[in-house]
Length: 575
Image 1: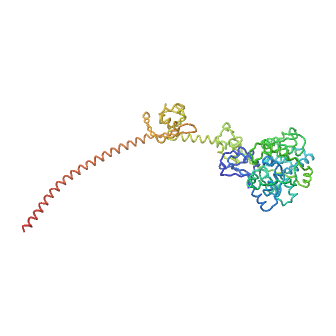
Image 2: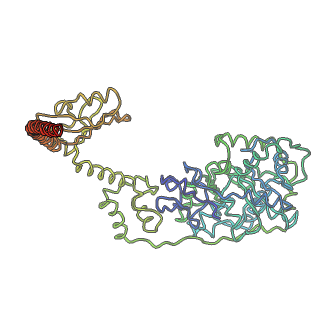
Image 3: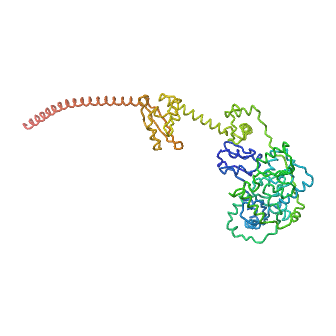
């Protein structure tokens, strides 16, 4: 699993990670960010800056728990910046908490820092002229290997304190133990897998992962007995390692921070600026201590605290002052005997083909930047210039529509196109009932021109009472029929109140022809009804006349039949 991954469900197409990534190792595909492992230096900036928490750091906590559950001897190597985040007053207190979590033992990584500092002293004594770039910070090491391969020869061929301490622990406790480094640095997770030191550190936890674990086991940790001081190596002076200049102080090198021989830099941008100068040969010096995080390791990307950088610095310095070394320097020196603290580095630069000028111009033209004057270089996409962004598009790292000004202009253009070509009239008025916008259809309806009426009171064009009602009531008006006899116009109007701007948007549908057709249909209907009624009346008269004739005939027939019956009856009686 990659050290830093992206949750696509949370990634919201904001490009903030691209803007803050110092080496532009973020690839955007389909609006979704991806961390390109081969380009990433694991500074953790994208993790810190992501507003949606879409960047996820590989969590090794499960692996560490598995070591413990399996009965392995797991020893914690805790980075010297721990007093800046955990509320402990002594190393023993921190060790007791770690043992309550299941660790077999614990020791400060600063012990390894002491050993590394000895190695730097040896380099200087052997006459290494420099410039020497310190390699305690894995981000700086990654930066040189991937982006400044010409300076690899200047990297101090010394392992980091994490690796030095891990090798020391395995020499003292046996190669079968599991060493877990705990610190504020995301890049340490990648360093543990580096080919030249692979197998020294078995897992890496961040301070945030440890804090979560402590919260999970709160009841077990709460009852911890800090007990007696354990028989472990203690750092002589290296607890100041997390601060800028800490390595030089621990190494007892001559010179101060103002010396031309010594250059101390913190912050990734400052490190890159110094590396640029070194690459061009514009800086002289012997030792260059670089730390990617501003303020040093106490400002690492996985420091789970809300306190300021300066509060954390004060806590660390206070801890150092209250926990002076109890053992001599010789104990660590003796322990370091026989441990190989050297390592090698390799170039990992990705050499991408450079686009031609015509290819760049073609990409720029696709987003409307047909001339240099149209290149805003606003940086909203995350790249420092439009040309840099075009190069990223060429390399498949960015998408053309990441240009926010272009997309906004395009959206406005499309919106204007729709508004201008809709058959319905559109009028926008402000809270003073002055015309802010009027489209072509409305111009035609009311016989005006936009240039003449924009900014003028609405009543100079049409009746504004309905608009005033909508503003006063802050509500909408749906499908109201309004006649304009002066314009021979009948309309159907919908008015929307825009709360954010305190404006009214009216959509006016010309239904004059429909009304004419409706009235014509009404006239035909009425005429048809009259004709039908006339026919019905005529038929009733005819029916009545026929009924009258039938009635007379029936009466005569009845009389004849009665007389016939009487005649027949009379004859029968005579017989």
